[in-house]
Length: 112
Image 1 (cartoon, helix red, strand yellow):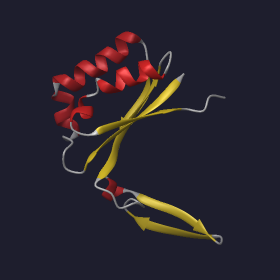
Image 2 (cartoon, rainbow, N blue to C red; image 1 turned 60 degrees about the horizontal axis):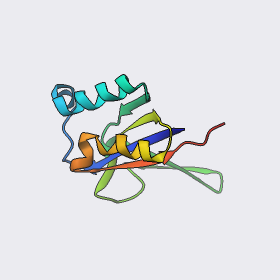
Image 3 (tube, rainbow, N blue to C red; image 1 turned 30 degrees about the horizontal axis):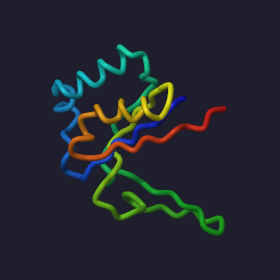
C-alpha cells in the first residue's frame, strides 16, 4: 500500500534545502528508503507564506495569499512510500529526522 508522509514543523525550525542536503541524518534516511525500495516520490515545499489558497463560492474564485488555516505548524514537504502495512509506514516515518522536532502525518493513498 502507498502512503503519503506529510512532513510538518513549526515555521522557523526546519533547516533550508542546502542544510538538509548536507545533513547526514537526512542523507541516511533517504538512503535507507532507497535501499529498501520503498521510495515512490516526494518533494520539499516552499514556505506557507508563498502559498496561494483557492476557493470557489457561488461560482466566484476567491484567492488568499498564504495558507487558509492559521496554524503554527505547516507542511514542509511530503514523501510517498510503498509499504506492506501501516506498521511499516509508521516505522519508516519514525526514522525521519523531522519527527524529532516536528511531526510526520502518515496517510494511506486511495488505490485505484
